[in-house]
Image 1 (cartoon, rainbow, N blue to C red):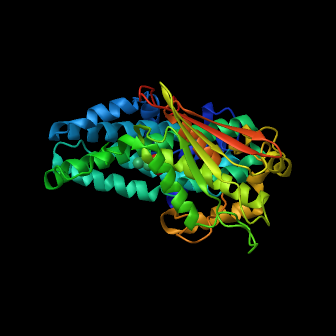
Image 2: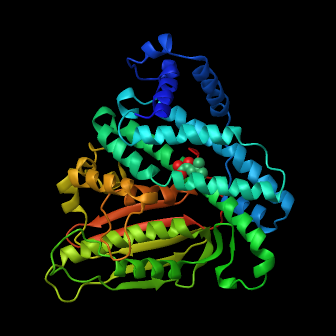
Image 3: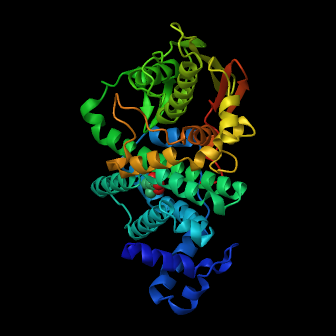
Length: 423
Ligand code: COI
């Protein structure tokens, strides 16, 4: 265990007095709590007591639309002061877990990363001009890279800890961790993109294709059909079945129908993460369910532009979810979003744990290179659910057993919902 982690764990144990779970760690409180840890925890207390300043998508767009140096510096200082507050809330969450959980491979790594990031942000001096902002953006990019493996680490750690946590506690903890992580990365990446746009604006002025209009990381006229097509193209290049059967049919056709001209303001990366995962699952189910057939039924993506939402339905003829539910002891399709092995025994599968370790060991947590089989680490559906809900949308799976599955994604199109409460 690294020195820093040992230190962090001591800090962790020293603050467990208010924990809901008892642990043998009160020993540390009495005997090993140093002045350093006392002060570290005082800082954490201070930041954790502040409320996050949540934003709407619309606010992010409006603020970023007309940039000048003063607004960019303001954005930098918002990110500089907001991220340590959001990280502090999650460190507190980690501290309220039983000791056996926070010391698990994966969870311990995340705890260490968060303490380090918290300390760095807390000490970062105010930004006053463009040059300092450039340095701040480099600092942010470095932290984003360092945290690339947080999700597989958490997923591994929580799978290993699943026997020690009631399913509701595990799932709500994981939801808070993931919502908060999405929120921090949105703020950091949006600020970096705003800064890059501002600096590059003069050189590229007027040359940007208006069909790709964006403010920071938010695409203001995101073309839903193009996003679905982009995901389909990627999946057609990538074997997704996890089967070695050479007779397995190739990727089925992906048909896009409905309001195919739909555009709305959204974070393209979020939409495409969800669509990619849903299509991937549908393709896999269709291939397996129609083994031996020369012609596969298509996977259909239907787009609906409602008054307040954009809806996307992905329908397949992959036989429905009953077989998967039976295999993993899953009561209802919504339990596929669970991280607890009690609700979904796939969480403890040896192959899945192995795939998570593989991903974690890769530089920057790269999941797969083009043409390589995507490791089945089993976090695509829960992550998609969290991405969908982040700005107030939803994701639902309906299984028509013996026929296929429909996934209903709904994303708000007005951008007026605040980020999830758990940031
Ligand atoms: C994460 O990716 O987990 C982060 O918290 C990144 C943020 C500190 C910029």
